[in-house]
Image 1 (cartoon, one colour):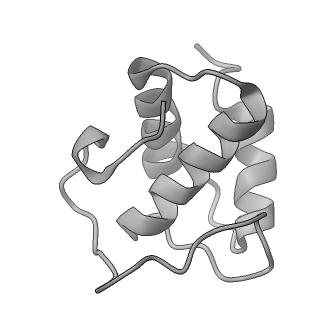
Image 2 (cartoon, helix red, strand yellow):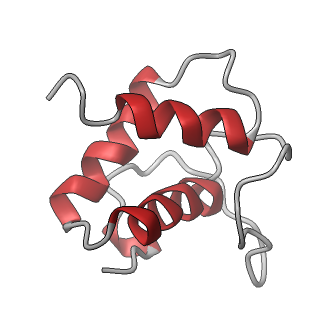
Length: 91
């Protein structure tokens, strides 16, 4: 499943205007957990590697990013590595 804006449960996000620039592999680009485009990018990138991810699982990742992502995870790479290790470990 490819996650879209309407699939997110949060309403606090900011959104980039126009077409999203977030594609490819995570980079050292700064990660903002309040940017809806970046959150979608992370969920969809994780799903592309993990195989099929349900709407419920995508929302688990979203909530983990929103509530639990350490402030030290400042880049896309560090955020993705944290998600990979932690998103489903406490559930």
